[in-house]
Image (tube, rainbow, N blue to C red; front, top):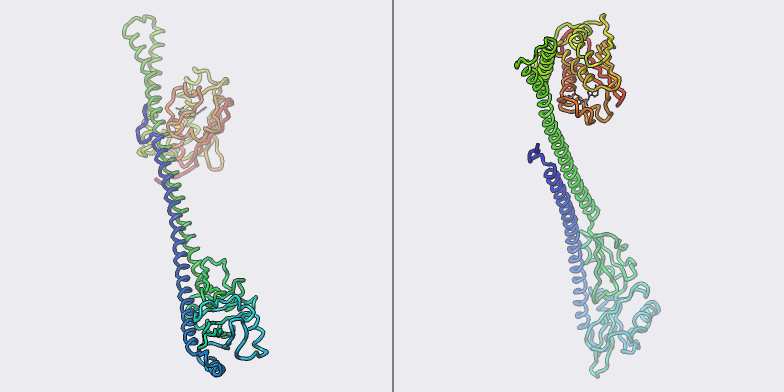
Length: 514
Ligand code: ADP
C-alpha cells in the first residue's frame, strides 16, 4: 500500500534539508553582518579620531604661521644697530622665540655674537646645514626641524634684502622646551577624550610615551610643514570599554546564532524522528490489517470448505463427519479467540476495558487455563511441564485479563517451535511478586528485537516468523495486562535455544488506584 504523501520520506528529508540549509545560510549571513557592523563602528571611531588629530595639527600650524608673519614684520634688516633691541623685544613678546639670528646666506653670523651655550647646537643644526636650506625665494618663510638623533631643533627662517639689495638670513629659533610648552596648550582639548603622544620618526616619545601602534583605534598624523619631523598619535581614552563592549556584543551574537542553530537542528531532529516513527506505525498498521485478514481468512475458508462437504451430504461415514465437525469447531474457536483478542486489545488501548479485580490464586487460574489448551498442546506434539505452587498467596488481579496474557504467551510458544517441542509453565512467589513464566525451546528472539517485540503490531523479521500467522498484538496485550496490575513482563531469549517470558505482578490486597 502507498504511504500517504505527508509521510513520503523523500519530501520530509528534502524539507528538513532545506530548513537546515537556510538556517546555516542565515546564521552565516548574520555573522558576516555583525562582523561588518563591528568593523564599521571601528572605522567610524578611527575616522573621528583622525579628524580631531588633523584639526589639532592645523590649529598649531596656523598659530606658528601667524607668529611667522608678525616676526617678519617686526624685523628691519636695514637697521643692524637695532637688531639686539628687536631680538629682546621678540623674546619678551608672546611669540615663543628663544633667539633671533642674523646671518649671511653663506652661514656667516652677523648678530648676535657667538656665546658658548647656544653656539654648539645652532652651529650644528643650522649653520652647518645652511646649504640645504630653501633660500631661493626672498621673503618666503620656511621652517627647519630636526629630530632627537640630530638634537631637537626648530626654527623659522626667511631671507630679507636690505636697501642695498644684500640678502640677510634671519633665523627665529624656538627651544625644545618652548616648542613642547607651545604644542601642549593645543593638545589639551584632544587629551580630554584621547591618550595623546608626539613622537619622532624613530618613535621616540617627544610629548608623553608613544601610544601603542597595535591598538586597533590607533591614529597618527604628521605635522605637514612646521614640526615636520614629528607625528601626533592618539587613541580614545575609553578604548578598553569600547573593545570590551564590542567583544561582549560579538560573543552574545555568536551565542544567539549557535543557540538558534541548535534549537532549529533539535526541532528538525524531533520532527525527523517523529515522522519516521509515524511512518513505521503506518507500515505496522498496514501489516497488521494484512495479517489479521489473513488469520481470519484461513479458518473461514476451512469452515466453509468442510461445511459445504457436510451440507452436500456426500460424507456418509460417521467418523469422517465427526472429524469434519471437529475441524469446523476448532477453526471457529480459533477465529473467536482471535476476535476476542482483537477486541480486548482495542479496549485496553483505549483504556475502556473494565477492570474486574478479585482475589485470585494465580496458580489455580493458570492450571484452569492449561486444561483448556492441553488438547491443542498435545495434539501439536508438545510436551508440557508445569510447576504450579498451589500454596502461593492470593492476590488482587483481573483473572480474565491474566488469562488473556497467559494465552498469548502460550500461543507464541506453540507458534514459534524449534526442534524440541517443550513448554514449561511455572508460577512462583518472589519478593512480594508473583512470577508467571512460560518457557520454550523454540526459535528464540535476536537481542536486537527483544525490546521491540512488546510494541503493538511489531512482528519478528526472521522468515520463520513471517510465514507464521500472527497480528503483532499478543505481547503488546501481555505488557498492558502486566502494567494494569502494576507489574511488568520480561523476556530472556537466545536464537535457536528458546525463550522465557516472565509476567511479574505484585502481591496486593487492595486494587491499584485508577
Ligand atoms: P505475533 O505473534 O502475532 O507476531 P506477538 O506480539 O505475540 O505477535 O509477538 C511479537 C513477536 O515476538 C513475534 O512476531 C515473534 O517474532 C516474537 N515472539 C514472541 N514470542 C515468541 C516466542 N515464544 N518465540 C520466538 N519468538 C517469539
